[in-house]
Amino acid sequence: MTYSGHSKAIFTLGLPIIGSHVAQIAITTTDTVMMGWYGVEELAALVLAGSIYFVIFLVGAGFSFAVLPMVANASEVGDDVKVRRITRMGLWISALYALLLIPFMWWSKPLLLALGQEDVTAQFAQDYLRIAGFGLFPALFVMVIKNYLAALERTQFVLWLTVVSALLNVLLNYALVFGNWGAPELGVQGAAIASVTIVTLSLPVLVVYAKWIMPEHVLFQRIWAVDIDALKQVFRLGWPIGLTNLAETGLFTASAIMVGWIGTHELAAHGIALQWAGLTFMVHLGLSNAATVRAGRAIGRDDMLGLKRGGLMVSAMSLGFALIVVAVFVSWPEALIGVFIDSTDAARDQIIAVGVGLLTMAALFQIADGIQVIALGLLRGAQDTRVPMIYAGISYWVVGISAGYAFGIVWGYGAVGIWMGLVFGLSVAAVLLNVRFWTRIQRNEFRN
Image 1 (tube, rainbow, N blue to C red):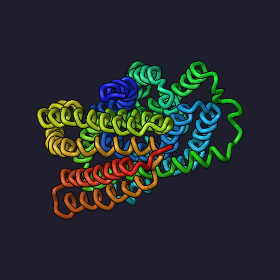
Image 2: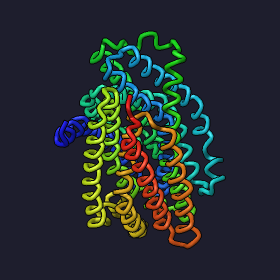
Image 3: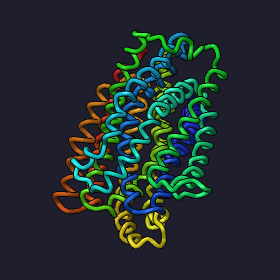
Image 4: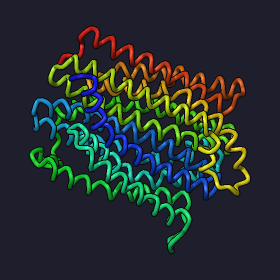
């Protein structure tokens, strides 16, 4: 296949995935915007609780991301039985993971206080997490089915379902956060109830669609039966992905905690800037998911030239988008931060001042963030997850957290200094992961 052919294939597969990721993060963006209108203390708590939930969720989602390359590879060689076994055990492991993590979410306030958070922030955050924990089961199940469908290149329905979910979340937030339309005014708890409701309603819709569109897989046949071999395969590939996700998202969560040491206004600005960085990152993540599917299928048919060309093309697409985002972040930072803060809020100017500096740092790590996640996607397509996990731990925690603490806390650069650490960590990850992928291609180590 030519480079233009790869570009078209990546775009066709990746665009709906990108759209669904953007619509998904629009749900948390809506929560952040409306909580910013509701109150600064509640916004700071939502930022903190949302960061913690996102870490817990993405670690568990490692098992669903393992489903993606394994189903793509099995589908390419026509092994429908393996497709069913892998997907079913992805659901099993996700359920076990959720069962283990919910207690930590229920009793989160003492942990947050021990990490130096203010009492009111810790209480609001626990209020959110206690409700959000009940949504962990359906959220992880939805991720498994989404990745199953993405591996089969059935992504259009997922896109539209996620868009509808985002719109419904706006309505539920408007009712439950502020107490409109006769609903009780629940603040942070209202945002959590809205999110749990949306994901719970999405799950049966996806189940029905998966059964209808691919009946030959009889996906939920004897769902209660444990398949030890498939369970081991999903676990073996999925736990390094989960820990890699932990390393990266933990970097941002640890940053939120350190910013929380500085002050509530700085934490609110951190959350707003992170919303914009996260929104643009969804494009890179969607391209990365497409790269995983394309790489898994290329290896399944032993097409090493296709793997190389596809890798180059998806990297170029990610880089092009990153350059556009850099220009936007640098050109209109005040407007981007200001949209999240009520115009009458007394802290508006202070939050915007901090947020502008953070968006400048976000612009700096856009390119590195895109390049590293594309390399991760390609390596996952080749079912190479353990060494990338080690690279992620070194990059994000040894380099990123240390640099952020030094710049932000020790040397007094505040929230902007902490975000400098993000730039360092993501840049190191981008170099290490790309060297591994392209070196292994050069050595012809990806043959099926």
